[in-house]
Image (cartoon, rainbow, N blue to C red; front, side):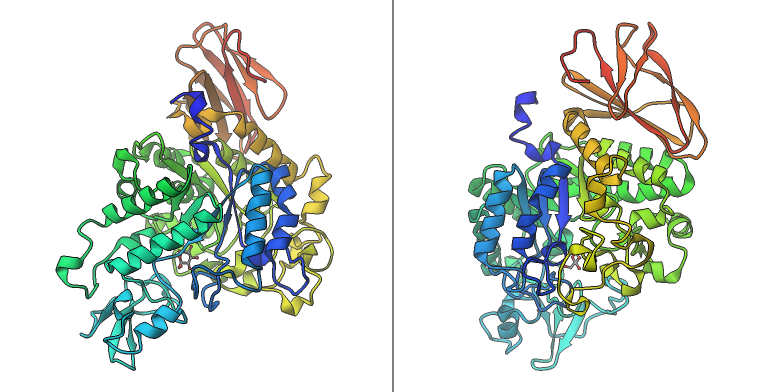
Length: 559
Ligand code: GLC
């Protein structure tokens, strides 16, 4: 791959930003965020430097899972806007150089979807086979449910016909039957519809569940011979319909299985996948003040096709899942960052945001984001992270982190002028409320977290080696320190992060470098000389970090 390829494989060097239109900005003051409000705030996102928006579901919904229970895949929730508003958003975003991807939630529909209403009517209804039904008594599946607080089986008896339907998530979210060719055709139409409106790809919900066709009542012969062939089909279809559209998949599985969802090293299935393992290891490393777990996770990533890419994150819209840690490791993270029962959910995750978990310590908060933006992969942020929003624990569910965006210190954090009771959920109260944490104040403050985010993102974009390059963890003696080098083409970036509270001096030795090379700080002023064997001693404060560009003689890069 050469420099000239970066524009086409745009996701390799992107910065993604996830938001829910419902909670972002309310422009008509009815209490619900809307597309016109988001359009008004695009310049905040441009200013921040993100390059691609991921919109959480904005389709008509029964609202039993915050929009992930869709009643019309081709529609727009009227509270949020119209198709016209969506097109204006896409058009305006593109005008500002921002791409837009949208959630594709086709593992299931809402039980209020007209297809399911038909399907449950009778066993011979034409839509019966759009869902997964069984007539025999299902086995105990209580260990397979995703939301153990509400469900104890993935099968639900439907009184009318006396059969059971499959629902991997809530019982109000019956699973579609992708072994049915009509369902597959319909999914393709959904993909085609939104791409025709100009979107740049999809965040694909619950991909392993979508492909899992065990339990389908369809005759053996009609089953998907190879579920991955179906994923390849979707990708190929998207490729034909778009110029560089991506599939960013939610696949929370061990790395070797994730590789299969990329299509192995052919890279012809999902374009990107979230790195859930790296995210969980980050928290374990932070809890221990030991970079080891994170280093092992990063070096444990399987090799992929050059087009494939990991999406890195430290927070998303769901519970901060710790399901891939061992029980002891999970308890360590709980003890460090969420010791109270009301901070935990499903025995596997936390419903907190990062700043409160780190006790508001600005050094550690910045350390984490410096890591996020310097790790190999494509950083993905969840709205509000850029200003250090906290959670509203009293919400008591995953929604604790989906509170209205905090724009100003005023009423409702400037999100809406409607009465508080009309908002989708409470605005954060307490020390992380809008009075203390908001965009308007941080925009003008050179020392704010928002200003720091802008710097990280701007520098990150100048370092294609982070998204594209080879990655190596360097040997050095401090367990608290992660020293990593990303190299690609004529660039190399050495990043040092000290996860411990004690200051350290990190000896580094760079192969192939000598006294003619320099290390130039990218986040602050400063250069460090290397000796004739490419060695230097770099001091780091407690929780300190440095981004050091390895400068070759005669470089023309901006330093
Ligand atoms: C994914 C989403 C989650 C949703 C679930 C069911 O895991 O991230 O928010 O509840 O799918 O659609």
